[in-house]
Length: 131
Image (cartoon, rainbow, N blue to C red):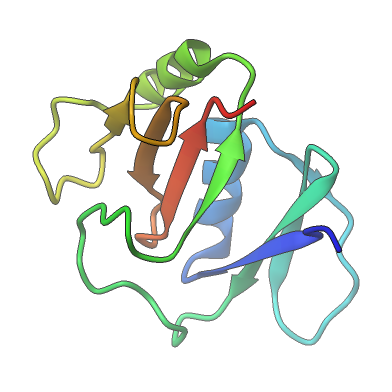
């Protein structure tokens, strides 16, 4: 078994495509002609699938809760990833509840650096420097 993809419910497809393409540099790939709208991205041998569903299940709170459902991107250059996020407006000094908040643990209990942020639909994303 290995992970093939992560599906993310979104309320505005074009906004989310731009977010995952521009903020994370993911490459959009061909998607089969399903009856629902969506987009697929390649991500290091796996895939990220966006599914348009404005009535879907969305987190009501605009806060980053690291114990809530999330997925993680791994990077070989954690500080460069933080810089890229900051260049797109994310900030470590943003207040809790600010959609541009970036929570960073450079030396956390996991044994590798971790950062957390929210996408435009409040999905929690982790970026880490795991081996």
